[in-house]
Image 1 (cartoon, rainbow over the protein chains, first blue to last red):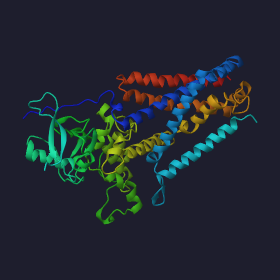
Image 2: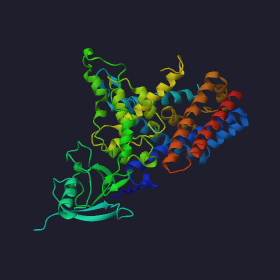
Image 3: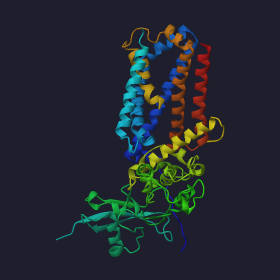
Image 4: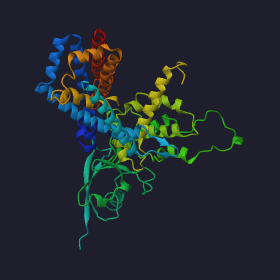
Length: 129
Length: 248
Length: 98
């Protein structure tokens, strides 16, 4: 009896075939906005180094309709990024307190607490004294 | 009185005659305590003796009967007809593996990968019998116990898109097994396993899709094992940068 | 990790709070931000604030291109990490010039 194993290939659009894969892909695509925003800040630093006129023009562009739409989208995706990241952290970093495992929920809540503290601190520092 | 029935569509493949797999429809009696394996056995016993599939324990401990049911990797002995009835069941061999015949897949690649992670205790030095047994506290056992529960059913490989996209990937079960030994307090072989586990085809191929842990019938959580190994390997890398350079 | 904690609030500040005037006037003003960038700790902070998210995004984008079926792995690598390198250099040079 001769063998002839048959290999099925993963379809190109495999990530659309099941909800769990689509959610994964959305999670991964959030990185595009994280990257885009970082690039935006790099441009800002570039403009800053070129002097007042260019920097002020940059600030104006931030406040243009396009700028605001970009920021809203970026914020949405950044939030998805944060929420999904916090959700999986307990898997990657199990913590032990003596003999018992720290519950996942506790680790996640601690992250959210830290996030609120950091965000509040940044907003506070951003305020003109 | 006519019996309740349920329809199955099973992917058939006969290497001696078929160019490619095709679906064949069967109608089996519906019993609310039957699992898909019971339906397959009914087909083989009463309708079509040529149907080939693997099974053994019928109680989700041997890992033999993995199949795709409506696109989801499941143990056929662990999937109840009542959860699908009255809908149709589409039964296919596990994805990402070559089909040998009908629902039987070629598992050689997996077996090699399992072997490659050195899935056995590696002692720091030889221990004479007079040293007595290893002592291990309940906490030390709990650290790696979930990762011992793997039954090698390879549902995780079927669920993993990275394995589908790149069959060089060592894969969830093998990496979870490596982690099981790395975490065992009796073991000193982490460095030896790193060569395979921490390679590009090892943990770094994983993008934490997490499907493996979702389909695992024994809650092994291979995704967690891989992420933990990533962190440990990265820490090693940084430590190697500190003096004494090169040593861990 | 870093981008999970810091990026949302930064986007909020540069994109929503300041344009809508929720923060005090001049929060992002030239003189203020210039002073921040001239301070050595400020310089380092600004660099870190772009460097970490850039490389995190570059790496994930490279893996995602693989997931999406882009066949040439090396091209994806060069595109993603190349972009991150370029932007890191731009950031570094800008900050050093200030």
